[in-house]
Image 1 (cartoon, each protein chain N blue to C red):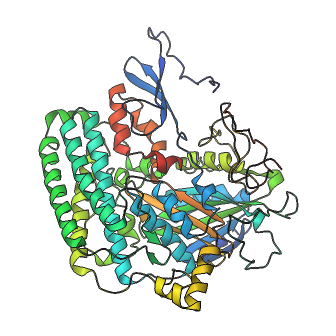
Image 2 (image 1 turned 120 degrees about the vertical axis):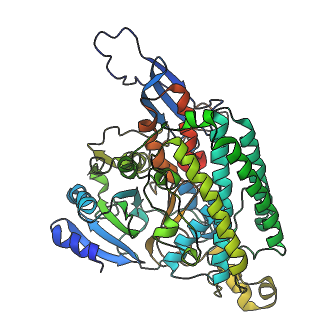
Image 3 (image 1 turned 180 degrees about the vertical axis):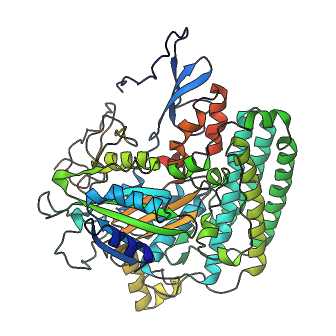
Length: 200
Length: 403
């Protein structure tokens, strides 16, 4: 375990759920109350000054209790998506992932915050790193995770009238949501349709 | 689309003028890439700017979840479409990091070579367009001429000018074709000559310097806080290059310098890019002599396709081919972040696997996404006419920022 992980864990024992190093990347799993103080600590005391990235992962397809190596699915041409329905997964559904870089030696640290679906709100980190502004907006746009205290939390890649959050696993991969009326294309605003985009 | 009311900065007490709001973009003849900047102007001085992106959003990350790991590579061509080879290298690097495999040395050299060609093309586009914006049309045409030579070279190597799709998980689509050295040297000759010509017309040009120096300034603290990387960060004087600070592939074996600026203005960004073109040529020259012979793909049929003779004539080869096409490479469960130095800065790929042959999640960290956040700071307080050159100095690529 790297020095960074030890220092973060010793400084914030109440916030750190887990800390491990995998493939050379230091990863800390945090409670959401801890994200802002830990980011400030990493920036001020450990020199992780470069904010790289904020993103999220929808873990609904990786439900706990599933076997480690699940049977590989058939070719997407043939298979129908089998995503568990909402509510079947216990605990958190999303993980918000932060990446920071220490420029001197190129060290990377990854922070992960598990978030429940019925309570997907996090404190915004824009007060610590103003560079996380647009990244948090993107996570909000794509996953519907809100950041409390964000100065300007609105959609960034999709248009304001867009319904749903496209990178959630239950959003249809081929859903149609035209902004204008287009002949032959029906609006498909509600998540839950099948993978082909056709009505069930 | 319904217009939402815009927050205009409060008018100063007793001011005789009224602020006007104009839209620059999404489709503006002077803008490279589809982006909308809503400017609040006091006469010709920019008072406020609201930058709106997303017009080229195609759902890259969602599409990636549909195919196998290798089927993502063509999508990465469409991220930064001026230097697609760097995206190819970055994506497969992330998957290989998760797989825990190292590609053969020759493959690493070829990947570095391709990245550097792409970097030259990217920088030529940026400086050429930047010169064009302030009226220097000839250097732009020269830059495009030199870039065209590099695109011919890319076509010779990969089979396509822009949609290269050259790398595969565990190797490359194919080895470099015969005669690549001569083709490269011919292209390099044109690039070097055109770079000299461009510098002769621009670097000491009074008009050019007046328009570029002290325009679009951003300080090193602000740049780092916004997450700047690449030439835009180095122009502010921060010495950070992914190739130097955490060398990937064979960059630690190659000798090159990282130019940095002092003031972080448009002129510094121009000068940094011009010097980086020279350094990239230097790297390519070293690769020409250093590149070893050998295979380009790892010797593992679970990762790379077996040769066609084996597929058609042996049962093992055929099964391996079938498994790889239908089920994909089984990548261990986990996550990895891998970064390469792209044309605009650190291109990072964050991949998550659930243990199957299909990506669970692929996320791209586009460098100009972070840099575009800082555009507001760079243009507010300046003149309207400087918005476009500053915007071009960032070299925003629509495909990359909007994904």
